[in-house]
Length: 209
Ligand SMILES: C[S@@+](CC[C@H](N)C(=O)[O-])C[C@H]1O[C@@H](n2cnc3c(N)ncnc32)[C@H](O)[C@@H]1O
Image (cartoon, rainbow, N blue to C red; front, side, top):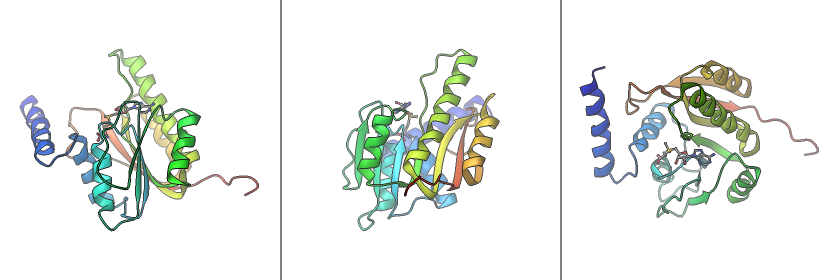
């Protein structure tokens, strides 16, 4: 793809986000993913990890709509400006910590039907360090599903193609019945980001329950 085309696509989604009142271009990625895979439903409890500024969460509240009884709990290190929808709740903090995971479980009163993660770590430009940081964060998302995702629930997560990408996919295949990778049109072609659709979470049995 030419540089011109890549720049054109980026500007196209940026302008569209402004026009349609989305907080980020990223909204279109989730819209396209959910249109194709039909994962999020109006009655779902959804946890959005790495949610700021809130573009994905806006899309989830739209899916829940006026009638749906779903919920979206949005977590980020950064402040997320409230979304005017009764299903929305924001938690400011680091989702890799047990404390924040406990707060999430309390907020959704149980386990989520769907976990979303568009989280990206801070990158420094040194390839080995950045590869390590992205794999480490993606692995944390996977670990967190053990605590917050219900049996047979689904996960949509961002991952970056790199050295540890195949390892991440094989880790996911151990925990989910079906794992696919995809790249929505709104994701820049030059970027190594991919989206993983993992369905049918095999929750571990909790002892004495
Ligand atoms: C690309 S942005 C997400 C964009 C969002 N999906 C949207 O549509 O607006 C990635 C976010 O991941 C967050 N993040 C990275 N690591 C995190 C962590 N450990 N805990 C919470 N948030 C984290 C960053 O603060 C950043 O806001």
